Amino acid sequence: MAGGDAGNAEGAVGTDFRGARQTAADHFLALADGVPVGYVDCGTFDRCAVYGGEGDDGPIVLETIEAITGAIAFTIDPARRRQGLATSMIRALIDHPDLSTVELFEAGVEPENRPSRRTLEAAGFHLRSAEPDCEEMPYYELWAPDRRAR
Image (cartoon, rainbow, N blue to C red; front, side, top):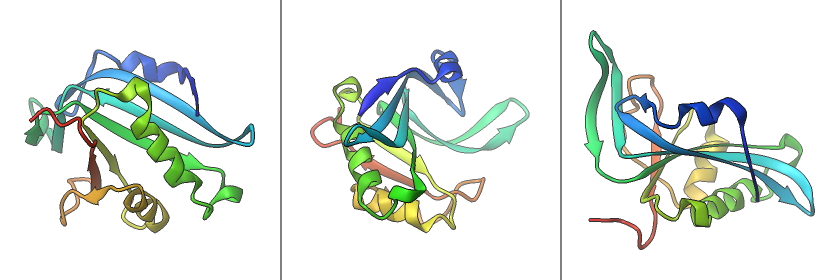
């Protein structure tokens, strides 16, 4: 995977988002035989905050998990789907040296996006809760091996 700058995403570093402070933003272009096939990014946060919507005073935080957390997003070239590339791309992200301090990785997925859900499961992620969040999104999580501070 090749690293890079995703422009405005860097501006989020140092800001609070849904009850957690973003500490880094890493972006990677996945290559297969030198050809771009996918993109994955990881916003790193000082904790995992389970978001419950917005209240009068800001975000409603239902739960806080005190672990350095990486929130990932990914996409794959539609012509290259069903080849295991997205799973490999996510595994490479988890093992990337720039993310060696991340203890918990998470990803929210649209409920009807079964291919992305299967990709996360193939990469070792588990459904965090049987109940979706306040935006009807199920969240998947993966504790990074040998990095959990507790």
